[in-house]
Image (cartoon, rainbow, N blue to C red; front, side):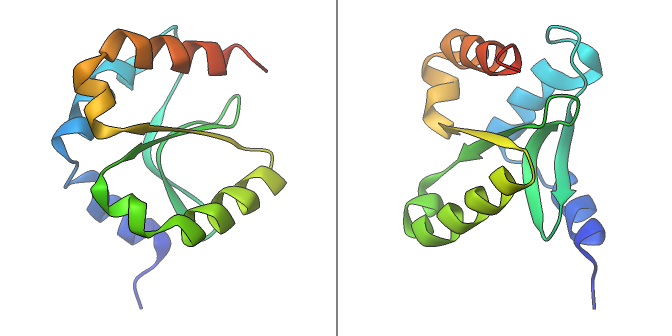
Length: 112
């Protein structure tokens, strides 16, 4: 049986175009000097992007997420019990208004 960590490693090698774009802006402490991880396992879930220092999860959602409302609700509720905050963006938001997405992330980071 594959572990959650193995699955996260696999996902890191197959980022979507939107995830690649956001990762480029977040990696290596480029963004406000916060350290981010991509495809980061927390419990039995894998977060698209995580800033562990402030327990902020950033999720980029494509069309498939509209079908997973109940799963996402349970996942986010569990993450909140673990002290995580989760913010979601649709893939098209990143392409249409990248600056607003980055401002929202910065605001969430500073809401400790």
